[in-house]
Image 1 (cartoon, rainbow over the protein chains, first blue to last red):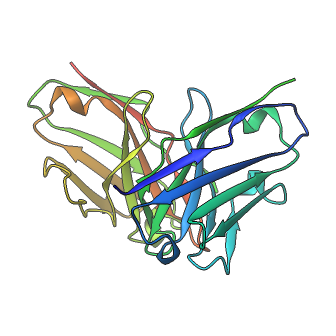
Image 2: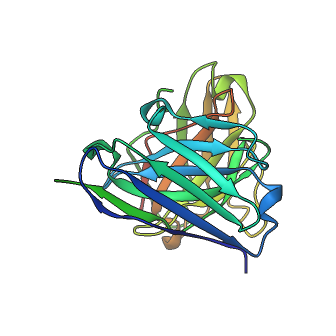
Length: 119
Length: 110
């Protein structure tokens, strides 16, 4: 069936790096833009980043600009998020989500992976 | 990229209707017809309920409807059911391929 599965979460110290992955199956991955969205514990959803279907353009929310990098490998149906210079404010469940309409909305979500930034 | 404004909580009895508002600016909600609503049950991933202000994805009951007026979007749930109890988030396109969410509204079915 159509699904997105995130991985790579864990506990990391402040100022360190972590790389998240999102494996897509049951869909033509290369046809879709993709997003990362995060949710801090007990808080609301926050859009993080968007990459176009072919990886040609990338867009970021201000809190992560310059620290996070979204990328994709269409040959492996995989989306990634490289997170550098992590702070405690980056602690959250990170979801990947399929784009529709060019950043108009997300119609498919993964189950999320938890990133905890703590010393 | 300021968050959209939603009430923190709303409630209703089974069978009743509730409306959740989502207020933004002319740079997001007011500027585009790209408002979506997502339902999230505790510990679960969000689920798309409404897109493009008022469109329902396949499989979403027609009890869920969306609308927009100026800088404010609304989600109305009619004929409330126990399984509708969840958090609801609005989301709007904000230009330059960016999106912004509301803070979320907790719906309690009494």
